[in-house]
Image (tube, rainbow, N blue to C red; front, side, top):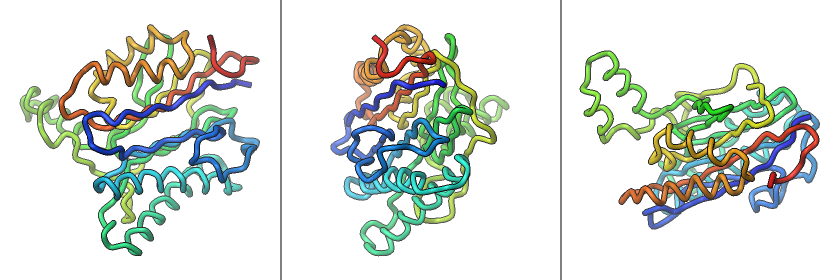
Length: 270
């Protein structure tokens, strides 16, 4: 059976507050404190990440609430892994709705969401928004989940010759979200139709959109160069390169790195 080395790191960037949340179960993260010590037999690891919106209080609360609800609902479920992920997302959306209804000052808060469950079959995921989920394998980097921002639509207009490529790349609307967890009906949800089979040496990265300061090729090269390092060092390297980019309006950046270890290995690789 495959085992995993994992770590999560966060950077505030140039923002005056942090609106990202992330957690891994099992771990000693505060967000998992209420969860059982043992995972269900069909799950080896659960990773969640949310990027909040709604200002200092609202955004931070939304991302925390989404992550906590995803974790707790998944832990209580008895259905299949994919079904539990779907139920967990719905529960998170309802939790946001209830919080906003109870406190009108929080109306409009929301978050992106990614949940990835690692099972003997592979990685099952569900996501809403623009936070990317990457798979690095044997020198290649692939974004696994859909991007629910305007960026892919603008890029398609450019590819179809209906918009200047440079204009599309610099359009201020690129990061506008087409879907998010806001307590209303979720317009776009990306969920794995079948688990993504994993193999030893794979690196799975969940990230908030602050990571997009780095081009995909930069991320690929970084993962290629650090593939032999523990997950914690890879996470530190990703955030380090975001900081080195010195983007004046750098968004919060959070990464969850999960390395797939050869059978029989446990804990960080050195």
